[in-house]
Length: 183
Image 1: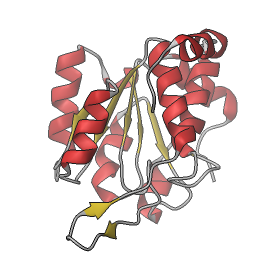
Image 2: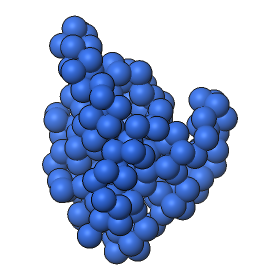
Image 3: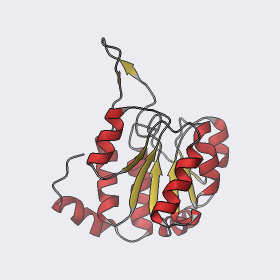
Image 4: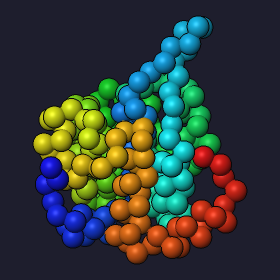
């Protein structure tokens, strides 16, 4: 059940200048695979990557705040221009730092997360979003629950909501098609 109607969703999306994403359970399905050498691996959805690239092409900032402390995640996000805060047990500290760095207010942010470590930011931002596979407490506080699960295109869904809310979808698509970045 979503706590706001679609018109309010798009009104909130109009104001978004930065989308913050969690990784595990949002950009991935939440599963962590352990390789023979002990390294952990995750699978990312290519549709999410395209949505993120389109959002960046429209001028909206992207950031990741995650409890995971993984160099592969950090390097991948840095490579594609996404601000990355890894190893954040208390994600609020990273959020405050990001707000100061970008000189934005709470209403300028959308946040998509799925677990208790995301809850305080979801309550604080202008557009708090979660996924159907989130824990119940997060679902109760989020403004919007995506139709797609984490790791199955949920990030793409919120990217498109922001783009349509800001009437920038066509421009973002052109920017994506003109880019050479590969997500």
